[in-house]
Image (cartoon, rainbow, N blue to C red; front, top):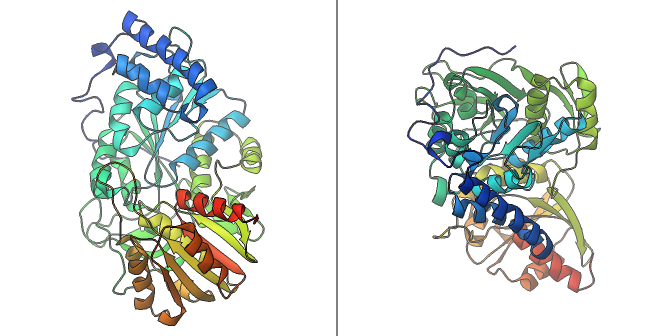
Amino acid sequence: MSKPLDGVGGRSPAEGLPSSSSTGRPGGPRFLFALWVGKLAAALIGVFFPSRGTNMSGEIACRIMPDLLAGFRGIDPDKTYFITGTNGKSTSNNLVVHAFRTAGRTVATNLEGANQKTGIATTLVKNTTWRGRLKADYLILEVDERNLERVRAAIPARHVAVTNIQKDQVQRNGDPDYIYQKIRRALGPDVTVYVNNEEPRSASLGQYAGRTISFGVARNERASQLRRDDYAQTMACPICHDAIEFQWSNLAGVGRFSCPGCGFASAETPDYQIDSVDYAKRRFGMAGRTYHLGYDAAHFLYNYALCGAVASQAGIDADRLARAYDSFTNVGGRLEEFTYQGKKVRYVRMKQENPETVQSAIDDVAADSTSKTFVVGLQLVHDIIPHYTNTAYFFDCDVEALLSSHVESCVFFGATNSFDAANRMTYAGFPADRIVVVDSDQPRPILDAIAAAPTEQVYLVTMIGMYETLRAAADRKGEK
């Protein structure tokens, strides 16, 4: 099973950062005042502004005491888990929490995905006594990867799970290697790190922790061979910086890999592995047991594998884990449907901030071999200023499987990126006369293009805000 690695970690997670001894002390007057104001704010927000209840009370409390997180008491580091990474941390966090609660454990958590300092502060404000003592046995938190180091300096969790480290929010995170350095500095000899065996950056983090548990997914029917063409993506080895070579991939940048330069490679068999998958029957096998697969997209398998690793290490047996997998419902499911003008529109959610989720959406669509129309809308991303467009991200995706899955036509919409995405498809060989470009973000011309699609089945890939806009416009026309 797992074993400590010989590598020496980076600097202590608290090095150069405030410690609890240098902040408002636990139970001190300033801490208590900030906590009580936060609790009062949480109560009022819950009544008058429930949609802002995941973040605002913690934000108010942290304005009074910036180092609020270090003041809470009764948090057992051995029962504190941080789940971080680029993609999949919300689902993984929620699944792990569900498994612990199904096993009868009390857990405080941020299920809504408020994963930065003020969101975590809100979770603790709501789940502690009036003197700041945690009211649950376990604290399991989704933590923003950029802020993991600072959060762990205040709350010294001894368990950190890393889903993957990939391109994401370039205006905020820059290159993935920048985030890699931030995560590795949060680790240390007192940490058990749970790493993705098939994602090179995550897999290499064991050298900076005291103990490593690996999880992964064996090659299955949705895995693909890696092609070498003008659009093939490359990745530098996190150990020696030579080019990583993938034998196959389950997801973009996730699969069996090795480095010809230093020999770093994914383990033949990780500590916890999903070794068989039946997508049609919605089930998978792990450690000799068959479990229910609630969501039949390939990326969900890594959420289940991570959960299996964390829960098993915490002493949750296979029967309780099976009950958790059977009853888990993801918050804001990824696949939704509506009809419009006789078209069955299936929405596949993605994050425009990174190409891996766009690739996962493409792979989900390609898994359906029936005749279909493929509709993509990439918009300007309104996040921090400056906003950004990521015109290159569709070029980072492999569309070969999509082209061979009976796509009859493509619709690309959006005032920012529609022509870039359309060009990517023409470069891949899709006939230009079967491509429709809607140079607009207004719902009417987009819905008109969907209504004119030559197939009954339509797959829509766009950001959640645009989907909700289109769905609302369709509903106003009496569609459902």
